Length: 285
Image 1 (cartoon, rainbow, N blue to C red):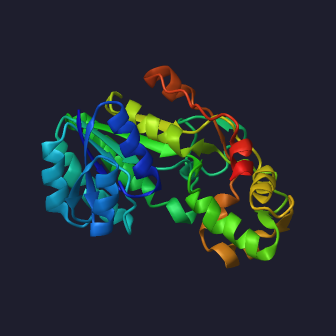
Image 2 (tube, one colour; image 1 turned 30 degrees about the vertical axis):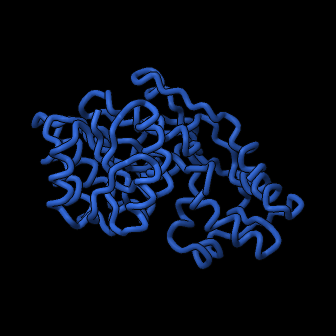
């Protein structure tokens, strides 16, 4: 299958291109710079020069493809929806896979699935109208699918590294918010890449949470990171107010208590996460 992908040079994108090609798909990937183009070319994809605001480029590339995977993060909900519309117009009845995230559910009060009510922190509240518009295309003959990844780990650990590992190394202790008893719905980057591949065969209007099914506490994650960071297992509690000051709005997302099951994707797509011990992976760094 010929797949057009946005965000190909990013953290999830590189893993997803690799997975798509391993499964025999041909990939064109959006690249807004020569550096990005070189990165996706090195992975085996054909670069398409442009950005998410180049709607004509998105539409034309989607029209050449049999499926689209939208991974790139737009600057706003309006920009994301405009890009999604351009790509859905281009792909027509082909599969369009849109990226959301589990943070939109807020606290889950135990183990939840895709049917949990939305209660998003302000950081991701813009996602609802975008995803609703994307999924409405199913009623008009489109084939939209939404994947909502949990908090990613493995490889670069981009968010975890930026907000926990790097500042923790500087301070001599890895932070966690409050008592650290809140759970994180983690997923390994290689597993989420496999879910995007599997989602190409999903039914129109499907929604999947992309999680590993293992939901450790934030404090346990901090302890694992401290071991890999070489700071002798040292951690420290910071208040939510301190976290907001240090991290900005994403602090409210990291403070969420989330537990999810990947059972829907396992049942409908045959996707089974291969990484089931995130703390061990994080402790190795």
